[in-house]
Image 1 (cartoon, helix red, strand yellow):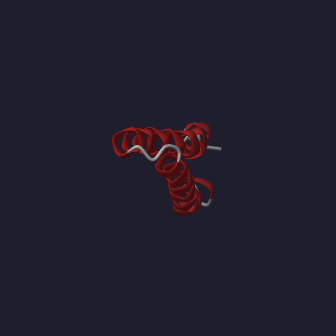
Image 2 (cartoon, rainbow, N blue to C red; image 1 turned 90 degrees about the vertical axis):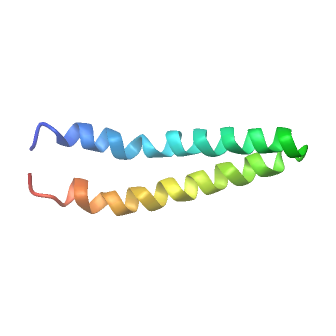
Length: 68
């Protein structure tokens, strides 16, 4: 096992909280600006989660299937 593999695994799994935080913060800011709380924040969280899953699936082959 490569010494970098645990770091790569942590990097892949850190996508979910970072994308959720970004979607939530952007959505919250837009909600405050447009006075639509909590609609856009909820949409931002859902979109952030979907993008995190998409990127995790893209990186899955690079991290787990690569012979290092």
